[in-house]
Image 1 (cartoon, rainbow, N blue to C red):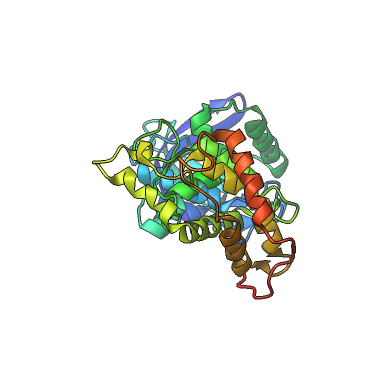
Image 2 (image 1 turned 135 degrees about the horizontal axis):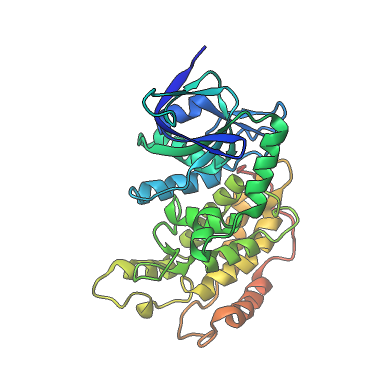
Amino acid sequence: MTIGEITSVLRRQVGNQEYYFGTIESDKLKGVTFVPVVEQSGKTYLNEQTTEGYQRPGSRSRMRLFMSYLRDHPNAVVPPIILSGRAWRFESSGSDPNYGRLLIDGPAAIIDGQHRAGGYIALLEEAEQKRPVDFIVLVGLDVDAEKTEFLTVNTTQKGVPKSLTAYLEGSLEAELAWLLNSEDDSPFKGRIARTGMSREKLFALHSVAKNIQRTFDHGKLVNLDADTKLDYLTRYWTIISDELEEEWSDIKRLDDPESKGKNDFDFKLLELTGFIVWSLLGPEILGRSYVEGMGMNWDNVRKLVRTCGRIDWSKTGKYIGRTGEAGARAIKQDMERLLPADSSPVQEDEGH
């Protein structure tokens, strides 16, 4: 039984392998594709199938990252996703044997581009924006041949420039850094730059990514999934902004046309030095507050932030001239001395 068709398709062949170029609207994409995974993720925008699966489950955070890219760049040209049309067949138009339509008798396996595909579907489901999705579909592959194509694509691709890699296909920390910039509930929304710095930005993406890795450098935290890490980062920095309200108010200067932006800051908190300090303290504060099987005790996080945050954050005060990595480590040592000796969290747990 045919479940769909795609018109305006071009047929090509290399050696004995036949393949096709086409475009499908994103509202049709989910219904005619799946990802063959070794185990289901439970958090994806795509259909997954574990029978003879060979791919890792996708990251919902990476899909949302690409969704944000699509939303912010409506004119972007995106590389096609690669499919294995296990039950797709071509019919020529008659006048041109290499031009016609694809009849779909069953879903195609996504060989490459599951996060891009998930981003298109997320954009449709969350923002009701439909986009055309370019694809290349190979036909006549068995599962072993699919695996070979998958491994070839994922082990021989040449890396893209660093800035684009960090934004789209980079490390988990780089992806989390950009999500901190784009998520509505993040205290850093709109304040992180992926390319050049501008007046309203606080930090460069690569600096944030480096310090996110430091934040979770604790045995209890390092292997948390991406969505949990994003939630913890957002809540951790929201607590810091609440507890250090006066110091955090420097952020208003970034949007004040009468100020000099960061040059008019009164405090170190929202300089990179401050970001490094709290990131270095992350393993101590979050590690002491995390309970296996229960999650993060946010009452304890708030208590520790309040306790060790009582230092002189003024740019002209005790730590004048203390900047960057060296300055941050000196400030961190003083803050650690303010923490209580008892490493166990308080008992009230708010979950995560």
